[in-house]
Amino acid sequence: AKIATTIYGAKAVEYTEEAESQIARYEALGYGSFPVCVAKTHLSLSSDASLKGVPTDFVLPVREVRASVGAGFLYPLVGTMSTMPGLSTRPSYYEIDLDLETGKVLGLS
Image (cartoon, rainbow, N blue to C red; front, side, top):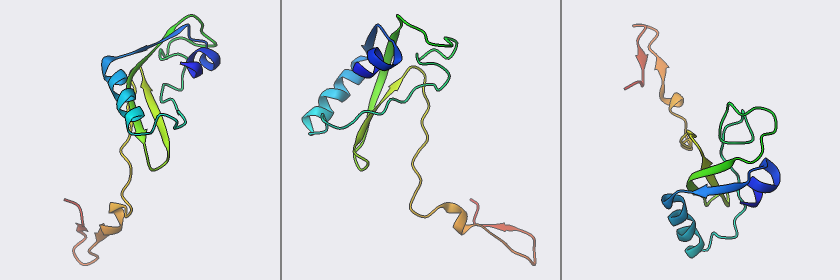
């Protein structure tokens, strides 16, 4: 809540039941002291991309909280936010090739 009220200008933070449950679980697992990196729209300080400039007195809705344990931080998802999956250690494009005799692309399934 400190990031939302001090930096973003929110008047409050609203957590879904799922987010509350996830926070409690992460604290029980010993991740409660991890730094926080907020995942939200880049178009506004709020979760609403239409609120331009420096909006104030809005409620920041946290719908989910995820842990990136290997990297050592927690990240709340604010509003409607999509995330991308992590990459494998060997990208699939290494397995794609072109058969020069037939012109067929190999390695796609």
